[in-house]
Length: 356
Image (cartoon, rainbow, N blue to C red):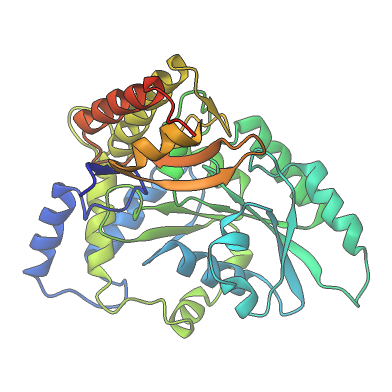
């Protein structure tokens, strides 16, 4: 029996306040398919944070579903998406985008983030040639697959580049809460809404039982989207289950900010404790992540000792035999679990080597 799992940020069910909201909504009769009062309230609360951007808000069940529905809806049949080589749609969605008939074109981004220069590389490789797919949508994640975040200047540069080149900019926000609460972040929801054509706010990985809030900012992308959501099997009949959760996440908490941000702040704080302690032990990292995903590099023997007590994912093996892993903290990660991992990692690193 392992002591604790740092595999992901959705191992636990849901924050108690969301369960209370779900219990209350379950005692009501609600209109179906996202037309209930809770979904309307959630959309109102989210729009209030967008700085006046007139956006449509659609509540969907999961991240892959939201990516698939959005990209398939926004692109014409001959068009393709551009993503970082590590982007979720290119690596962990079982070809979901390709299954809709849209190719995913990738650029190698060492830190997980696309830049205008990387986008231009993809555009040059395809040119203005009807014999190849037409790149039309740029897909980015904040935070990225390696835990890095976009600065406001970086997102502004991407936005300007996309507009100049006639490209759509879509932001995957499965871990947007963690990105917004990360040290060094200077983006707010209003900034994102002003700079992208569409994005989503992840609930599944930030305290919800499940759910993502798709925010469509570009008026040209709003038409018939509910038809397309329904056609893809993504319109939940009991939409109030999503609405009640997002309303609870974005209602202002007293004292402090909305619960959505409080939960992300907690996940980041526990990750920061792990990161600082491992740094102090001389452990390096695959990526400089200020969010709730960490990628430390352990000597093999020490790692095997730690693996005896904790669950997490091996990420990559380096040429020198050391192994990079992924540790993920969540809204529910207990400080004592972090304390235990730090103590056990320190013991594993200081233990004598096993004779060959």
